[in-house]
Length: 117
Image (cartoon, rainbow, N blue to C red):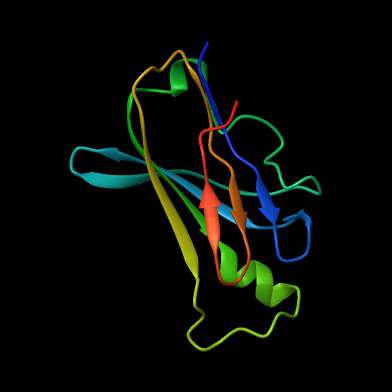
């Protein structure tokens, strides 16, 4: 059974990014369709898979992380406009039966990602 999950680490403060908004979308019929909007918990996770089983289809997906709002809420001094505002990660799922974990490691000035396990 396939599943898609994520988590966010605040690398500027060395903690999980609690309360960050994340939008999940899938590219369908030539347009992006929002599947869900979630917020991270105290561990920087979404409280379970974003998609699993028959809801996970092969195709193109996008996770959009609201990085600037998260750091603003912490009181970080951001430029106007912020260097990073919303960070979209576009990725493909080729095997709907696989496990795709797509984390974000971020500060107000940088980010990285990888396919985790």
